[in-house]
Each structure stands twice: as C-alpha cells, then as structure tokens.
Length: 372
Ligand SMILES: *[C@@H]1O[C@H](CO)[C@@H](O)[C@H](O)[C@H]1NC(C)=O
Ligand SMILES: *[C@@H]1O[C@H](CO)[C@@H](O)[C@H](O)[C@H]1NC(C)=O
Image (cartoon, rainbow, N blue to C red):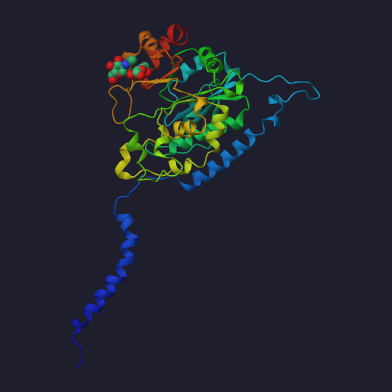
C-alpha cells in the first residue's frame, strides 16, 4: 500500500528543523543586536605592537645616541647633556583650532619642546595643511580612527607616546592634550613646575630620574564600581583586581620612564582593550582608567596623583564637562581656572573651550594667559 503523500511530511519537517539549527547559529549574530561595543581591529593592533616594540627597544639603549650620552668621558670628553624637552601630544578628531594661541605659547621655547599630533585619518591631511610653519611639528602618519566608549583613545595616546619616545631622546616629559585644551600659564611656568617638582617630595629626593608624573589618580569615585564591570563580570581578573582599579583625567604629563612603562605594557592592555558590553556602554570610559590604574600599580610614589589640566564638571551632560563659550572668556576666568586646592601646583591647562573662543582668547593672550 502506497503511503499517502502527506506521510512524508514528518520526515521532511524534522529534516528541515535539523538543517535550520546551523542556520540559526550562522544568522543569529547578524539578526540580534551585538552584545559588545566594537573592538579594536587586529590590523591596528599589530601595527601598534611593532611601533611599541621599537620604542621600548630604543628607549632602553639611549647611549646609542651620542648627543644624549651621559656615560662619562669618551675620546672627546664628557658630552653635554641636552636640556630635557617637553613633548606636546595633541589628540584631535577635528583640527587644532587654538593653534594660533599655542603658537604664541611655544614662541621662543622651541628648543625645549617638540610637537606631535594624532588626527583622525579623514582629517589628518587637512590638519597638517592648516598648521602654520612654526607649529608644523610631527603629524603622526600612522593615525587611526578613534571613538568614544572604546579603547581606541588609549591606543591613540600610546601611539603618540611611542612616536615621541622614538623621535627624540631628549623628550623627558609627555603632555597629552586635546583640541579643546588651552594653556593658562606661560610655557616657562609650566616647564619650571615640571623641573622643580622632584624637590618637593622627600621620598624621591633630588635624583633627576625620579621626577614624578602629573596624572590624576582617584580611588573613591562613586562610578568606579560600574566602570570596573563595564566589560563583564570578573573579566578584569586576575590582572586588575577591583581594589587596584583607578580613575583619573585622560589628560596628563608623564615622565619618560612612565611613557616607556605605558608603551611596554601588554598585561593590563589585554584587559582594557576588551570592548564594553552594550548594556553597560554608559559606564565605558577606558581611557580614564587605563593610565591611572597602570601607573598606580607600578609606581605609585612616582605620581603626583593630580592633573595639571583643569576641567569643569559642574552640570556635565552625557559625560562631557562644561564647554566654555566666547561670552564666558575673560581674564577673571583664566585666573580662576589657574587656582588649585593649595596643596598642589596651579593648573597649567584648561578644557573644554568651544572653537568660537579663539578670538576672545587671543585678545587676552598677551595681557593674561601668557603673563604671570
Ligand atoms: C563651571 O560651569 C558652570 C556651568 O556649568 C558655571 O556656572 C561655573 O561658573 C563654571 N566654573 C568655573 C570656575 O568656570
Ligand atoms: C578642592 O578639594 C575639595 C575637597 O577635597 C574638593 O571638594 C574641591 O572640588 C577641590 N577643588 C578643586 C578646584 O580641585
């Protein structure tokens, strides 16, 4: 007896069901929203690794550079050590709108500094073209795209550090700034602050190599808990226990040994580079944690634990601090922004300023900003 045509259907059905299982696995990731924010592209990672390796290698053999040799009498006697330089590291995703102000700030001090710029690849050429000759330092060719709520801002800062380490062995201080930062003291005041700091710390003494980095390091912020778990539960272990997790401003001045430490690190980076969970994206600020955590774990005595860059968090919106508008710019504001809590150095830089502030800032540059 021939089976009726419909008798085959249970088999067909189960076959279809069976076949659909792999299809579900294949398609599901495309149909469901992603569980994490975008991660760092592998190609960017391997480019960076090659750059960082070179920087660390060269930094550990400074005597290869004759102008920097301090290892005593050669044939020509003891060579004079160059004065320490400050590497200004500009992180921008648009342009450097305050470059006329920075130029005034740098004028006459170029023998004590170098400039490095990390611009978004889509604007790097325009940024380079727009800079005047005296500002045209090094636009970093290897810039990569950055975005908020990802570790790309850490990568960009490390790229700047590595490039500056490689470029000039006289770079002793590394000041990270953004396009919305401005100077609020003249350069010589900043330079003096960096050079004189080591005399204030009895534990460190006068040894030039024990100068401290100016980086904010806080361990008691209310958001710390949520930010620690932004990548998932317990994923930071064992490298980063909760008790070692720190927060601080992403804008800092590092001494050379800390710049090398940051560029050499892979252990903590492997944790901090992990993308945040989509559902915790409001707690995702990797660049505010990586540097303070790393330095506090490896050399807490070597850091002042405060930043030289003033920022106004009153009424912050969506993780952005108060942005100053042209009508707020005045000599009084600059003098107010300089003030510290008394126990620490005055602030040397401030953020954030809207691009339209350039004109009023230039008007008070000579009379207030670049005058003591
Ligand atoms: C900080 O920003 C608030 C507005 O968000 C403003 O009222 C206050 O004057 C600012 N403080 C300083 C020191 O500029
Ligand atoms: C100064 O310190 C006090 C207490 O620690 C703090 O509330 C205040 O925000 C600080 N001010 C500045 C300008 O850092």
